[in-house]
Amino acid sequence: MKKNMRRGFSLIELMIVIVILGLLAAMVMPSLTGKGEEAKRNLVCVQMKSIYDGALDMYKIKNSVYPSTEEGLKALTQTDEYFKDGKMPKDSWGQEFIYINNGGKVELISLGADKKEGGEGEAKDIKMSECK
Image (tube, rainbow, N blue to C red; front, side, top):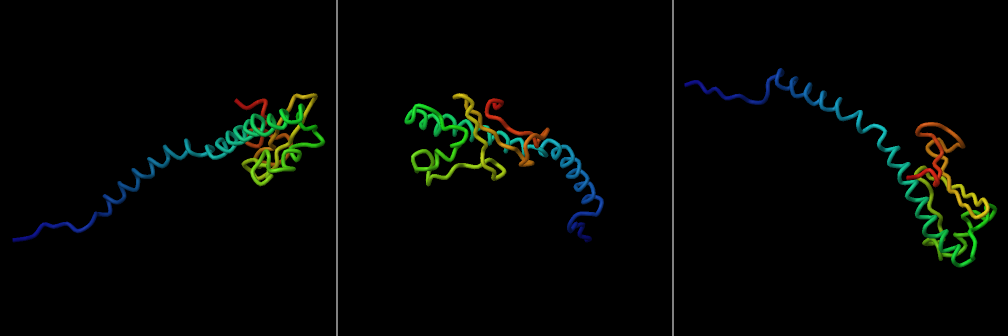
């Protein structure tokens, strides 16, 4: 009697599996690319709102006004009162937030991925007033 046992896969079977995996990757990859930068931008908005709603509001309650543009966010880091260890959080790209107080109207800005003023697309500056 002849044993009809197969050991392993044939070359054609392996090729079919590789082609199927390639097709699946080609369909999934476009939807995943760019999501990392979008997540970083969303995180920056959350950080800015947290700074504004938390530390800046507490500062205003204690001092009756927001820090001036000249004082900037450094006014919040003079003590451990507003941030743990007196350290200001940085944006998703490791840069400090820009703080502007225009007559009591406060704006926080991140320069974005390019770390330069201006820019378009993923390199566009992120302003707290434009966050959803």
